[in-house]
Length: 311
Image (cartoon, rainbow, N blue to C red; front, side, top):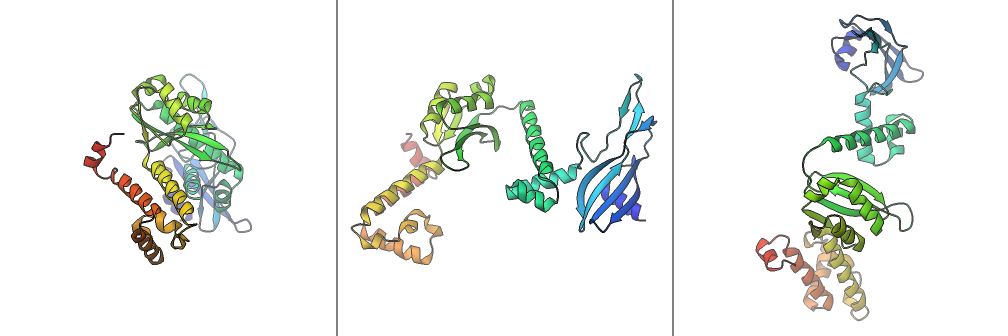
């Protein structure tokens, strides 16, 4: 009865049968022993293996099996690999999927290791294997990439950066290169895209970092460079705050007004909204800077207005 129950849960197919289930309360582990009952004529069996599977209740669960070996028509002996795991791994596909899901949620290998109750090496191996599979799938894809984006990501302490190339329509990272120098940006485009792909690029979005622009013009000269909305608004916000800091020395009303001026109106708290209205009515220089930002934002939502300012 117990064996049949686990067969239904595991659903490994008609060729595999649960022979025995053993619980070890001292270590909170469950071992499920599976045997091959398929039609292939078995030559012999490989030594027993143990795979980590998804936990059941509070128990760490393991699949155990001696994989059958069969003699092929050419006389060679081949191991039949199981449907629940990759031939080189000691964890099941479902365990790997759960680990990847937690990595995406936590963005932290150590936390994932603790939650999955496994070693750091297992989590790190799954992470790298998943990345390599993704890279192989990317190489095999034949679709054109027309629009890409270049961005930067700071890491560790100090001004340490990585440059990131992404497929903006496909929503995926294409390549990462340490640093954001001219040389690094050039290597990013060369490694992330084949010559044929570079010739197909129509548009590159980026912030206003000089070496991104220079590398794009050298490596993909036909592509149109687009400065993305996020960074443009960021620069405008910095300009507003610069004006505010200069004016606050002369106008008491501008104290503690930074977030009232930089937030979108719909996100203001009641206190910030009152402060914002006071500043707006006073017609300070920073008020005019705020109006300039709002007029600029209108370009992204008003096509008619955008056509009047083709930059």
